[in-house]
Length: 217
Image (cartoon, rainbow, N blue to C red; front, side, top):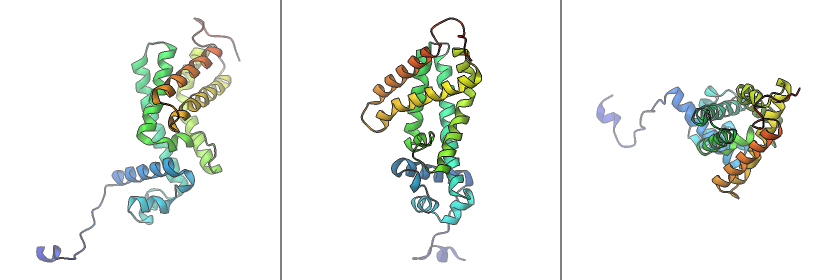
């Protein structure tokens, strides 16, 4: 085909092939915005395809099911949050319990600002469809697991009790950020509330109040 034919008026431009990783990133970004703006029930393959300007078969090639799409979305959020946590610990160490707690809360805020509040809300599984709720809780469990040993050093409690303490701390910290997410608190106020809540609970469970581990099982 001649150059003139390729550029004649009305000719359809050649399709541009987007690299796999770039397309996957685009679809996850679209799904994340949908989850934040309209809730889990609107994270559907059809809706994601329409928002992204691609066909449904293309979305299905990358994410064979809706659950696979949501799982990838949660894993992407958790990976970003985990990286922020790691960086926060490095910056805060050796530091105080208060400083470390604040670093974790700030890292959570930063991740929500980048990835949206939708995946954050879905992590605790509340109000979601049973299958999506299960995915959210499983992702949160995997996210917290690497930090349980550090918490055990602070509390001296058994692994079983320590895992429960971790869930309590997480729930309290998440609740403290709700006001910022819904717009009733400033970011600074939410960080202060979250830090204070987590530190108070840590002290109640034996951390930062004595030089050695507390008994407990």
